[in-house]
Length: 218
Ligand code: SF4
Ligand code: SF4
Image (cartoon, rainbow, N blue to C red; front, side, top):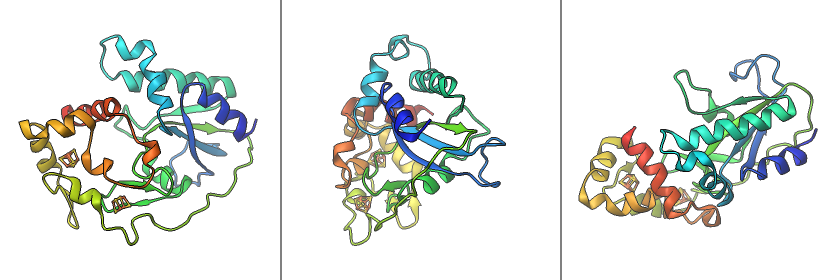
């Protein structure tokens, strides 16, 4: 088993192998884990696979989470791994810790993770805990994408929900529940869309609206 094989297999479900790490004793991985592989959004393929799946149209709650459990669970079973998910808690798996350790990402001026290549377009759907040895290339880190950036992301939020003091969730939610929030509801967070990094990884308007609605009603 190697990373290329797993990457190819994950791609059949539209999932990108976005990162990897060898977890330490304080990283919250299952006992005996030799490697954690992170899976998620890496372009339009994941959304296309999900939209074609039965979960997308069955009318039951949490369709994307149920799809993720099914396809990542099947992948894990095939390779003798354990599937882990960033949803379904509490308790929650420490995905944020894993992603910062396993990918070239940094904290952006919006607070959320910004990937050096994917920009703000990360969306982790699960992880595979492997219990046998596998070669893992080092995670190469470059410059922080926000260094020297004038932060068009912040400027794009119609209610200035992102400031040096942090993300004003209540202000954002109030806007989303108002008539003026229609553009955000139709396409997803406008601040996220305004970042020039990783534009080719951007979610479609439909996907953006789906995630925003999930946030709005949570
Ligand atoms: S727009 Fe600039 S400051 Fe904002 S997240 Fe993107 S790179 Fe960082
Ligand atoms: S969803 Fe809209 S209101 Fe909320 S932070 Fe993003 S741009 Fe601002």
